[in-house]
Image (cartoon, rainbow, N blue to C red; front, top):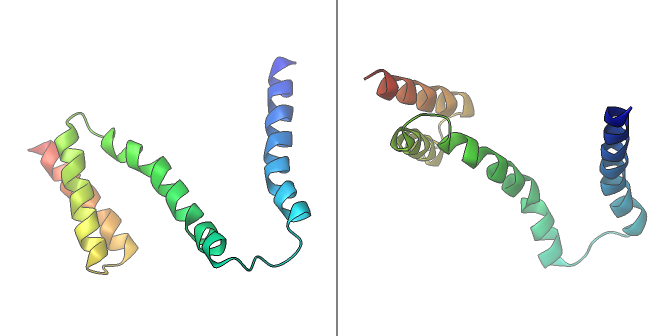
Length: 98
C-alpha cells in the first residue's frame, strides 16, 4: 500500500510540473532572455545527469577524463553522434584493458 502512495505522489508531482506552466503561461513568451534560457534548459539538464555517470563509470577516474576529452574533441570536430559514442567507449575500453 505504501508503494502505491509513493507512485501516486510522484505521478501527481510530475503531472503538476507539466500542467502548471501550460495553465499559467497562455500567451507567447516575448522576453528574449527568458526564451533563450528556456532553449538551453534541456541541454543543461541532460549534461547534469550525464556528467557524474561519465566520471564514475570506471575504477580509475583518469580513464573517464580521457574518454570524456576524446568525446569532446570528436564532437567539436563535428563527428557524428554514433561515432563519438563508439570512439570514446572504445578508447575507454582499450585504456582499461591495458
